[in-house]
Image 1 (cartoon, rainbow, N blue to C red):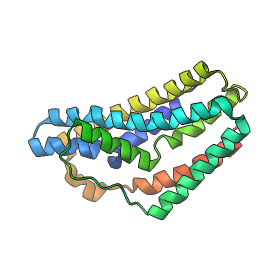
Image 2 (cartoon, one colour):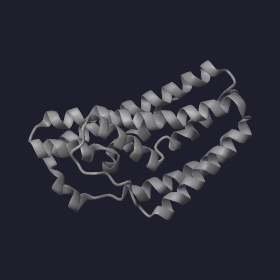
Image 3 (tube, rainbow, N blue to C red):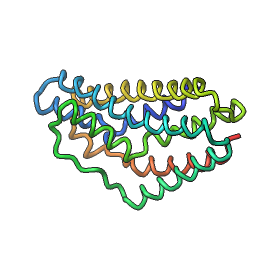
Image 4 (cartoon, rainbow, N blue to C red):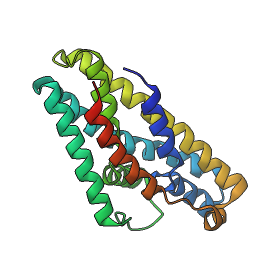
Length: 205
């Protein structure tokens, strides 16, 4: 199972302020301490990893029992339906009580946000491609779990590294004010990527 695509998607999630680095910067700004920024990174990464693991685990479990064609079509349909849901929501995000969150709150917030954005769903085409490369065989549970673990670890590690780097650069160099001039609508890019992933899943062979 290749780690490259999951890592690139993890890097993208690390760049997206809605996935966590903005919430990592906030306590640093409030308390004027870089250690607060660093301390917020592990719970955000943990919540993200839990959300991704949920999607990857569901795929691996389904792959043990479902034929390859059903797995591919089902994954594409799920991605397409989720893309439609994102369009219908028009950029709305789950609300939270505020920016001052503890370890548990940050972990739960990250899990909810990652799940709402479909972070784990985007990795399903990678798993479909890996299964197809092995002749569509996912009936060996150990092999399927190993592949899922590679995807999860590569994705989370890349997300953590990029998120941490961005958070510290924003805190120490740029300041949160730069967002007013350099904001990118990541939701539009992500929604388009979901639809492209759905289409690509159908042509995996």
